[in-house]
Image (tube, rainbow, N blue to C red):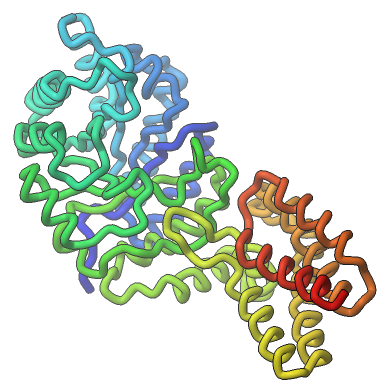
Length: 422
């Protein structure tokens, strides 16, 4: 079985960092499923970014020590990441003394792998010469450690002047993070990786921004499987680290599929992996109910189809309708609506920790179920289409991203049928 050398995940999102208990939970779960790297780079840990120059106080340092030991017990490489780019003064030796002391403090915990981040820094701090000089100095100061550099230019074609100069100048003990064509890339393929390698002298270490949903994506919930990753990519990349969500329990669903891909990319099947992950997290019976909600949360950079079961029901009903079988069409829609209602009941009664994180999306799901049922009533002549128009408007006004196009097209088609018949 062929797999990636580095198989892991980042806690590298903006938002509330995971708790120590959650981190241990994820480390154990991902180690059990074949990952070997946990990169600690929580943007809102002040000692990672805003207060990068300050040593960890005793309490926080003890917590990190516990995580390092826990990773070791589970054969996971703990990668500590530091992001000094916001305020580092490249001309001030006091800054160098601070960063050297910070890495030395973490090395004393037994850490062997490190990340140095220059991402998301303000204009005016873009000089590649500065970033290269600092990265090289750090790597030379700790030559027996491994480093992964996150550049300021971390996505694109892979031949941008900044990334070429940085990659070609980095020491041998430094990998180079890359997110692909975009910050959140729909595809990652062999040709892209080879082009990056040719121009930078480094095979990419992919920082894969899935399933993360911070910044502009905070109304999205990414519950779908990883997709769009080349089966042969493991031969042309140093590895992949997937970036999690602030929503810890929800992250598990996507991460389990990521683990499947990393462990056996050449035989990975997204839908099968996703169904296994659902069953593992919920049990078969509850997974069969939860899936009618979960499939509505597939919209992401991966462009997965939202609501395939809903689309199949609607399209199947349309075929019967056009053939003149209105009772058959209504029966198919009502059968699907019964499944939606059952899922609504499950979400209302479930104590599952993932369900507890999904409040605003469950609110929209409830409106979705109401809208679907009302659409059936309009088809039956039991409700007015003006009421349906208002319900569709209210549904669309909810910010949480859900199944938009397919549902809207179905409802608008029913409204149009009513208008044609008047």
